[in-house]
Length: 240
Ligand SMILES: [Zn+2]
Image 1 (cartoon, rainbow, N blue to C red):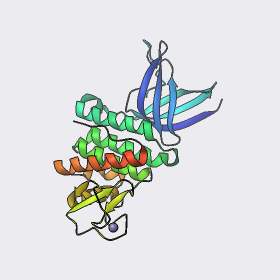
Image 2 (cartoon, rainbow, N blue to C red):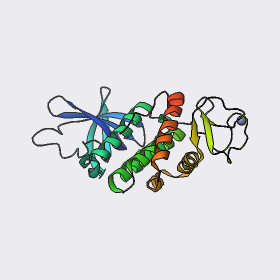
Image 3 (cartoon, rainbow, N blue to C red):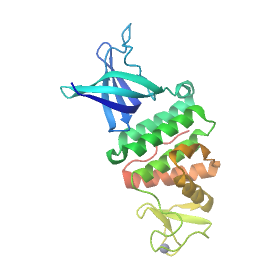
Image 4 (tube, rainbow, N blue to C red):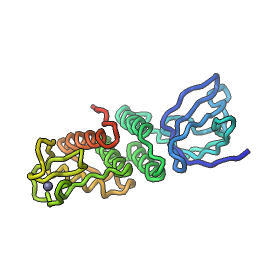
C-alpha cells in the first residue's frame, strides 16, 4: 500500500457511519482533499488520528483504497484553540473556510495554504482586528488567483491617479480609472486605495500589521467584493 504525507488545515467535517468522520482539508501539497478518519468518534477514539476538528492544522499520512483516501495517522501541528472559543474569531475563520472551499486554486496550493495558515494564526493568537485580517485575506486571495488590482495608474490609459482624492474603480478592467476614462463606476477614497496597495505588498506572515479605519474597512469590503464577484464569480458575504 502506498502512503502519502500531507500538511493540511481542516476546513469542514461531516460525521459518517457510526464512528467515522470525513474531513475537507486544504493541503499544501494538493489543495483541497477529502480524507476519511476512521474510528475517531467511538468511545475509545482512534488515537493515531489526532487531527479531527475544524481549523486544526496537522500532518496526515494517507492511503487510497477503492477511490477513497483514508487517514492512516495524523498529528497536530497547531490546534488554533482560541478560534473555537470566541464568536467573532470563529465566524471570521468560518467565512475564510467557506471562501477557500469555493475558490481553491490547484496551481498555487502553497501560497493559498500559507495565506490561510497565517490568517488563522493571527485570528487565534494576535490582537489584530478580525475585519482587518479578513480584508487582508481577501486582498491576498485575489492576488493569488491572478486578479491583482491596478491601483496607482489608470487601467484604461495608464495615466497616474496618485494625486486624486477620489478614485473610481473598474471591475471590468480590474483597476483604477482617471477622470477621462471613468464614467459611473464606484469611487473610493485615496486613503483606502493606498491602504489596499500596502496590504498587497505585505507577505502573508505580516497581515497582523494591518490597521484600517471603519471607513476604509467599509470601502475595501465593497471594492474587494465587487472585484471578486466580477473576476472570480463570487462576492464576499456580508459580515456584522
Ligand atoms: Zn485613463
